[in-house]
Length: 156
Figure 1 (spheres, rainbow, N blue to C red):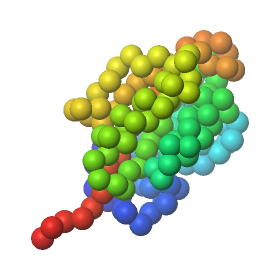
Figure 2 (cartoon, one colour; figure 1 turned 45 degrees about the vertical axis):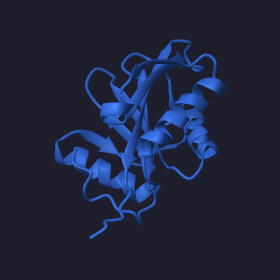
Figure 3 (cartoon, rainbow, N blue to C red; figure 1 turned 60 degrees about the vertical axis):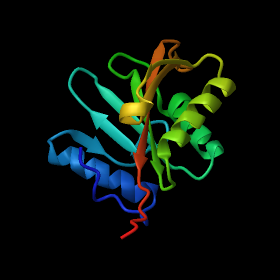
């Protein structure tokens, strides 16, 4: 998905709507601000009870990312059949976004000892995956923590 039209000046909702529009362009059933235990930023429906939920945050503090993790994992996630995956979308306007993602991973695992990191692609793809027991169902819930770099300060 090309994210070139995401802007430094857009808020979380505007950025998420842009992603939802791109998903719809590819005929994916996606929506923004859909009610799923709260107003979920990115909601993707599919066949056979498939539901993927994404919570988006513009990084300005790790506490804000923690809020997103808690929203996704304790408010929106069901962990039911076809509904056991979600994503934290981290819009990063600062330099060297990979360091933000590394620090977030460290803070997440220190604050939540039940969270297991099982796929780390920060160095090459700017994401990592975690899983933990879903409070709602007691089944494993998987989260991809994805950095969307928005830093823009050309030298020329």
